[in-house]
Image 1 (tube, helix red, strand yellow):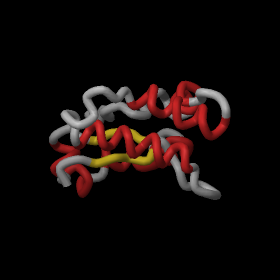
Image 2: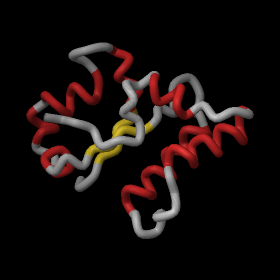
Image 3: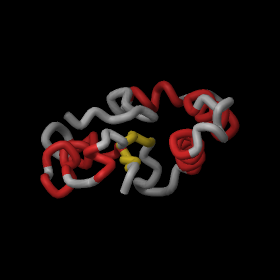
Image 4: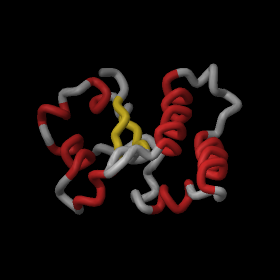
Length: 112
């Protein structure tokens, strides 16, 4: 694929494990076009014990911005995420959630 979106939940497994580690170190993943082109982006985890619909919606806006930037020119994914969370849980929690995942949510991921 030309672009990958990585659910960052596996960061909690620790150093040397998880999806990001595999993308950086597994030769099979290193052969992927998206990895070679540095087009891998971190998204919020959304499916642990149940679905987090706020994260699903926030991720959708971010993915739209990456795939169709001209159609989402007026959208800031972080602000949109806080709008969604504020509606669902009565407060903006994106910054707190982002910090749980090394502040790489809604960012291009460094694989080198």
